[in-house]
Image (tube, rainbow, N blue to C red):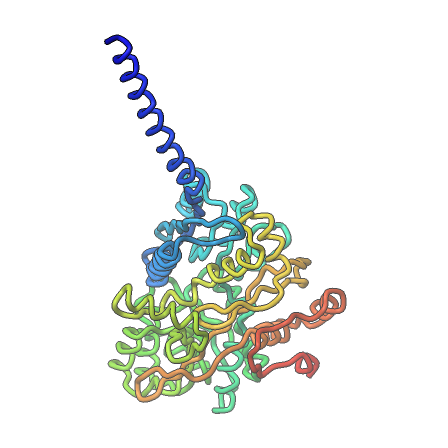
Length: 441
C-alpha cells in the first residue's frame, strides 16, 4: 500500500516536473523574442495647426510601423514609440518638456521640434548627448558648438523659394519690395535673409516694417506701404488672421502690387477671397500639399494611409515632419539606432532624402566654421492663386535652395574653399534652375 502511494507521488511529481519543463521551453523563446522599444521624442506647440498635424503624422507612422511587426534595424526589431508632447508655445515649458522626455521617458532621439526654440533644444541635446533633428534658422543654431543638433526643418537654405517668386514679380514690373512682419528677434534675421533674395532678383528692399504682435488695425500700415511706393510686399511671419487683415487693408487703401504671404491654408484663402475677390489672384506662395505632385510610390502610400486614418487630408504637417524621414534614412543606412553611429552618418550626409513634400538634404556651414552637414535645404512646391483657387505652380529643388542661398548671402568664397577641400555635394535627381556657374555671374 505504502509502495503504491510512493509510486503515485513520484508519478505526480514527474508530471508536474514535465509540465514545468514544457512551460519553460515555451516561455524562454518567448522571453528571448520580447521586442525592444525605440522611444523617440517630439516637442511642439499644439496651439498651431502644424503642431497638431505633426502629432497626427507621428501617431500614424508609429501605428503603421508597429502593425508590420516593428522596425527592423540590423539584427534587431523595435516597437516604435514616438512621444509627441505639447509645449504650449511657452519658452520655459520647452525645456521642461524635453527634459521629461529624456529623463523620464528615456528617449535618446528628438525630432520634428516645431516652435521649440532651437538654441534651447540644441543646448539640451548637447548637454545630454541626445540626437536632435529639429527646426531653426538662427546663425547661433548652426555653429560648431552644437554637435548633436541638426536643422532638418529650416529656412537658411531656403532663399530659392523666395528668389523664384521675386523673379516672377520682377518680370511683372516689381522694382521695390517691403518686408512686413510682427516685431521679434527672429523677424530681424528674416528681414535680412528675405532682403538678400529680393536683391538677387533685381528688387530693391525698402526699410522693413515691424509691428506689435497684438496689432489688429492695419489701415495705417497699408497707407504707409502705399506712400513708400512698394511694388511688392513680403508678409513673412504675418500669418493667419493678420495676413488676412493686412491684405484686406492693402485692398481698401487702393495699393496695387504683388504680395508674397509665404503660407496661406485653404480656410484662410477662402476668407481672403471673400474679402478682396480677384485682388489676390496672381499671388505666388508656399504649396505644401503633396497630392497631385508627389510621384514617389512610397510617399503616395503614406498620403493614402493618412487619408484612410483621419478621413480628410490636411497638408499643414507634411513639410514639418522632415526630421522623421531623414532619421529613418540614417537608421536604415547604418542599421543602427546608436546616437553616435547616427551622428557620424548625418555629419556627412551623402545626398538628399525623399520626404512627403519632396527631397530634403543636410549641408555644412563653412561660413560659420562648421564642416558637418547640419543645415537643411528643403525642397517643396510653389503655388499660385488663380480665380480664387490655389494651384500647384512649380517645384523648388534642393540644388536651387542651396546655391541660390549661397549667392544671395554673398557666401560664395567660403563655400568654394569648402568644396575645394571636401568636394561639391551630390544632389537628388531633380532638374534645377540654378547651377554652380551662376554663382560667378
